[in-house]
Image (cartoon, rainbow, N blue to C red; front, side, top):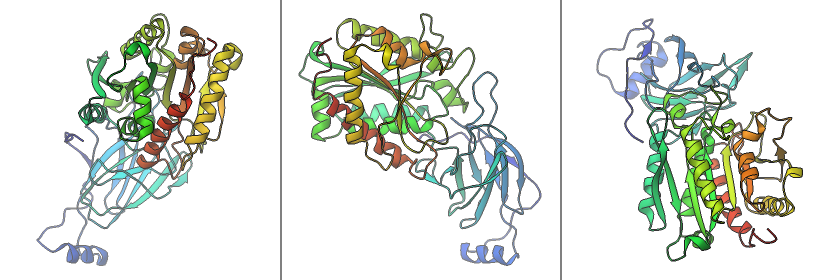
Length: 418
């Protein structure tokens, strides 16, 4: 990741810094005996994706009490992501987090380098809050609601994929309302005319807080550009477009994005979209469909806290043509065959129709179902985030297995009996 900007930090003056020059072993022993005060804990969050309102730092108890930063009109207040310095390697820190819906996963994410992420031990719930305790073996650490994936990660992913081989091309989907670039990727094996290709569109993070969806996207991209024969086969017959983060602006500032004003990205697929990434995606999908070269749309999300396995949201079946229903069933069967875990897809489908949301027609996969050819499959993949397997490796495994499911699905042409 890029080097983060470090601002003035939140701190407490209750306990002075230790003085003198002693070895780590002696210093830690002295702390345990109470002879030397710990270094002063400080909390920073002014960096890309950072979020946190610090209510208290108890230097003696080594406890930090915080909640997510509230961003007016920017959606749910649920995402938090902070850097803590002043840690004595080997000590256990306590984070007390809450006062906001959706802000308290059973396990938080932590990292000693802001790059490799692990889960904390399971937290202890206290009303609307949760208390995490985690031993830290470094002098600084980052803690977050889940493993962060910020705009620079999206840029690095598409750049890496484009440099990995001639079958991947990085491009900019658009610039956002806050004038940030939206990195995207086209993947196809050279030598086949685009007119003969299947069209696949995969995007993540229409809701900024759902960071796990971008890690699923990363796992998918890593597989798509790999030497796996099944990935090679899919590249030969397809043009695959991937957008790792749709709501770049809210991800950058650490806002939730869900239910933002005037609407979130996943309720914006209308005749007059507000968000530029949505407008750009709609236009490119329409162009491919009008050329007869569009076949599959997958929107990557994370669901509610009580979901233990991935599942799909679909357009109500009664609104699909016969060929669309048959293709959906084939895609579900392919997903069951290949998304085998540890976050396994077990065949669950949920429909998002008029009783799900009053703006259901403007949800991305529903717009795709209504505005493309009858054979097109359009789904939302919801990957569970509140489980012991909801880690960077777990998410990337789902992405890799999703790629294999797509390849399996396209072993039979989806355009039959259009």
